[in-house]
Amino acid sequence: YAVPQIVETIQSLQSQTLQPDRIIVLVNNCKDDTESLALGAGAEVVMVPPNPDKKAGALNYWLDTNLSTQADDDQVMVMDADSALNPDFIENAQKYIKKGHHAVGGVFLGKEGGGAIGMFQRNEYARYARDVSRKNGKTLVLTGTATVFTAKCLKDVVAGRASGKIPGTGEVSHVYDTKSLTEDNELTYALLHLGYKIIAPPECGLKTEVMETGVALRKQRYRWKRGAVENNAHYGFT
Image (cartoon, rainbow, N blue to C red):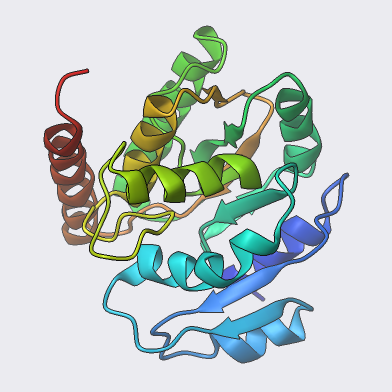
């Protein structure tokens, strides 16, 4: 019996050595049984209204309402629904928050499946994890698969977009820039431009889904590469 991915994700949070206070699933443009599965697994569920801005829009929907109610030293972890954390992820992230980092990203390996294409991705992710470890957690991007943020740094991103210090979208400022194809990469740029310390320590491990077909892999990588180039253009040379 295969555990549904959203249930596996929730269970990985419930199994943490340091438990999160809340587990919230944003049901966004879903046409499957995500809502019932998430509720059955013990998570809170928030239904996102029709949203053209995909993941960034769904996250902004919750953050726009709730971020201002958080204390600066509260923390928000954002993760993908196809990821599963190692049991000590959150506990290890706290060590770096206490050292002055305001964003702690995960280091991911690939889940099983996908045949030869999946094997190539698992090899790629393993090389990336080894490279980050050799660099003592120095990373170019805070992965969207799982990253812990302080509420303070996210509030400052909103303020920075409002003031024009960093790029933003439209008349209302949000944490995530909805015009970006790679919202996690763009948010990394935003935090660095605001002077925040970030890290992706090897102790914060997780596994994430691999693309199972060449077509799906091509679409994923095109989005990643094009998004990174566009982010560079938005920020320019600094």
